[in-house]
Image (cartoon, rainbow, N blue to C red):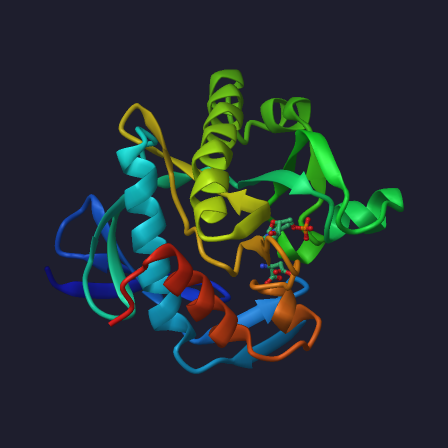
Length: 237
Ligand code: TMP
Ligand code: ASP
């Protein structure tokens, strides 16, 4: 497969066309950003670690019956994916309070959420990804009622599968964000699942092993991602 023109460059990944109309190449870069692109840095090895981490997680989700855009690894920092028509919505599930939910409602970080809490956000950095509800999504035509239901059900299914996977490595899946897109008549999980888009804590010490290390200047960002990968058995080399 040949890499074609650049289609889009985001904060951490660049998307390329290929010689197959239904396939794209995702290039995971070392660029790291937080706070809607306000804070940025280059972190050595992050592109490689996230590419392989994402491939591992997407394959686990496929094995559990969740349909994703992932096709195959292409190189250390590139993957081949199906070309989706993306829904501009971010789906977040939270098992433990952290991040924006604490600020928004004045709750303490670390409390268990029963039931796990679901939120939709509009993917729009310029507006700081405002929270939206399913009426906004349908009324503005971002997705249909059926797609909203599918995104929600699929995100909870991912939570069940991955909470168990992280628990097997002695970790807590605190929260995560997913994005979906259309492919033919289907809605598939798109984008990525890496420690850039979720919160993962050590189950005993509650040490942060995700992008909060970068947001909060805790250091050892990629080292933490590699530790998570090692605990899950993600092959990095
Ligand atoms: P939040 O606490 O900032 O709302 O984020 C919840 C989870 O979703 C956290 O794991 C980070 C992830 N997330 C992203 O990766 N990108 C985003 O744009 C947003 C809003 C959340
Ligand atoms: N991924 C988003 C950004 O880079 C949100 C965040 O991680 O803080 O701005």
